[in-house]
Image (cartoon, rainbow, N blue to C red; front, side, top):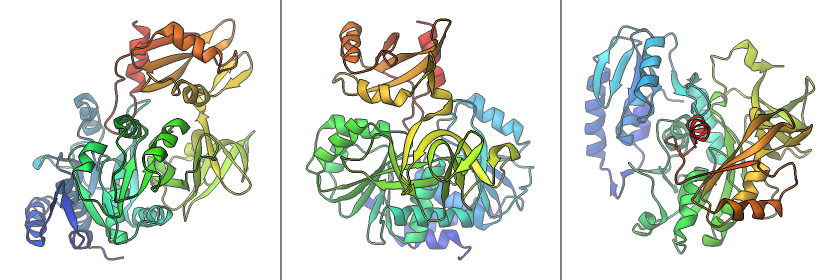
Length: 441
């Protein structure tokens, strides 16, 4: 693999929103980026944040080319979290929207970059990823989605997350596909204003919900959707399929610590709820159950791959596998069904209740746009489910609906309604914030 990532990247066809970038424009932008990167001390650690996705990509790649260690910082990361990261890293270079400050920390690694975990349940953690392995992960992920050089990948998710770096920047380098940068998420109505051909669109479950709500099919030129970054309900996937009957839909799974892509599968109506595909090339999966690692069955998902972060702790491994907190079922053919996050599993008087099973039923209710099931301690039941819904509905009617659809153990003991959930940039719900709001109701 060539180490000149920038040259490879700008040799691809790149557009920003509706305009295709000329080679002169790309080279001029690279010149401006290089002038800043070349002024930095050798092997610097760089906290990189930029609202312009194309410029972010070039700075990121130029930093790796020059032997620096760029750490991708979300543009919407709260200042107090950003300050904590800066303090924990010493005095690194901060390259914030093309302005440079700081700069006395040497990178301990080269040919690597840093990605932050999403921080949906705690403060984001830094994952150090090898760029060569990341490119291999991007190629395996692209192959699993059948992305080809003639296709155009539309950037609709943030570029600075681990997924964005793989799915947009490194995929374009490895596959040679066309890449379309956008400063904001493209809904169906915005896509209707464009002439599309062989387009790939990655969606988070929140974006999928938004697309389905617009109820505007008839767009030609979308080759496939891939849905990841959380579990999408069967109902939403069915509605997407009805809107785009000729378009292939993939369900995917990954996590930053794993490089970040892990599984991909073609979604069909007869797939079981929670289906997230099979392992991509280079990834081996297993489950941990009763202290034993097994190739199939139910248990905690275990991942073995060269794409893993390189700053793994011993406590994160079991038999050389990364041990996750996700409960899955792997069948004899290698198909993976997501069951629940380990911490989310609810013990109702000795009965295991999976929040996802309740959430899938709740999402059938027309007036609800999203929902999350939490657990609450109980002296009588040990734990019981409580429900937060996005959408102002009549609680009594929803409660009656759920009692006819769920077992007595699954029916939420409390229902809390919110006009809108607090969210992160990927569209994931800020669970900590939402829980805090529930407690203060």
